Amino acid sequence: MAGVPYEWLIGTRYLRSAHRRGFVSFVALMSVCGLTLGVATLIVVLSVMNGFERELRSRILAVTSHAELTGMSGSLEDWQTLAQRARLQSGVLAAVPYVESQAMLANGPAMAGATVRGVLPEQEREATGLAQRVIQGSLADLAPGEYGIILGSALAHELGAHVGGTVVVIAPEGTATPTGVVARMRRFRVVGIFSSGMYEFDRGLALTHLADAARLFRLGDGVTGLRLALADPLRAPAVAIRVARALGGDFYVSDWTQNHANFFRSIEITKSMMFIILLMLVAVAAFNIVATLVMIVKEKQTDIAILRTLGAAPRNVLATFAVQGVLIGLGGTLLGAALGTLLSDNLERLVGGLERLLGVRFIDASVYFLSDLPAYVEGLDVLKVCGVAFLLCALATIYPAWRAARTAPAEALRHE
Image 1 (cartoon, helix red, strand yellow):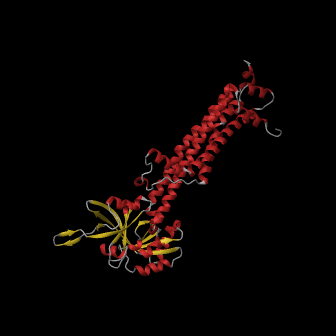
Image 2: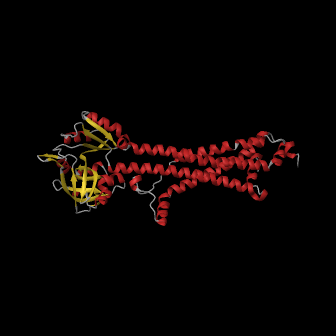
C-alpha cells in the first residue's frame, strides 16, 4: 500500500473494527443506513413534486389554450379578421374563436354548475389536444343548430348523463317577461364524453358548437374571444401581449400561467417546505455520525496515544478520524441517491401495486387534480440533496475528530 497515507489506512481499519463483537462497526453501519433512508426519502418527495408539476402543466396545456384575447365589452364582433391577423404573428400556431360562460346543467333531479364553451370543431383541434381526449363520440358530432354537447367524464357521472341522452343547460341571464324574469334554458343532446385526466376540467367543462353557444348566450355573430396556440407555451405572457398590441390593444389578455398561477405557486412553496422539513431527517442521520465517532475515539484512546508517541501530530489524528466520518457520509449519501432515484423511477408501479394490495385509493383526483402519482427525478435536485447531506456529514465529523486530536498520550496510557 505504498503511497497511501497512513491516516486513510488507520481510519478505514477502525471502521472495520471487530473489537467488542463489532459493535462500533454495527453503529457505523446504522449511521450509513439512516443517512441512506433520509437522502432517499428527500429525493423521492422532491421527485414526486417535480412529477406533479410536470404532469399538471402538460395536462393543462393539453386541454386549455396557451393564451386568450377577450373583448373589452365582453364580445368580439369582427373576430374572423382578428383571427386571421393573429395567425400571421410570429410564434402563433393557431387562433380560434370561442364562446364561454358559466351555466347550470340539469338532468332530472341532478344539477351541476359548469363552464359551457362553444367551439368550432374543425378549428378546435388546432388550439388544444382536447379532441384527442374524447372517449365517447367525437368532436365532429357537434353540428350547428343540432344543440349537441360533449361533457367531461366527472360532470357526466355527476349528472347521470350518457351519450344519446339529454341535459338542460340553463343560462345565467334570464329573459324578461310580463310575469317576471324567466330563466333562459335549452335542452342539449349528449353526443360525447371526454376525459382529460384532470379533474378540474372533467368536472367543470362542457363543449358545444360555437353557433349554438352564441345563440344560447345571445352573442349574435360575436364571440367571447380568441384562443391562441403558441409555438413556445413558456413564453405565453410576452407573446400574448405582443399579439394583442398588434391587433389594436383593445383586449383583456390572459394566459395559462396566469389562469393557473396558484397551482404552480403552491407546488413551489410546498416543494421548498418539504425540502426544509425532510432535511431535518438527513440532519438527524448525519449527526448520528457524531455519536459513532465519539464511541470510536473513546474505544481507541490507547491507539491514539501510541500514535502520538510515535510522532503523529494532532492534525494527523484529526485526519484519521475525519476519514471515517467522510466515508460514512459519502457511503450513505451515494446509497441514498441511488435508492431514491430507483424508487422514484418505479414509484407509480409501487403505489399502484400497494393500492391493489390494500384495496384503497391514495390519490383522490377531486383533491389533487390527478389520479396517479407521477415522479420525475431532476439531476439538479439530486445534486443539491447529496451536496447538503455530505456537507452536514462533514460538519458532524469536526467535533469527534478535534476531540481525538486533543487526546493527551500520558493521560490515555496512565492506566494501561
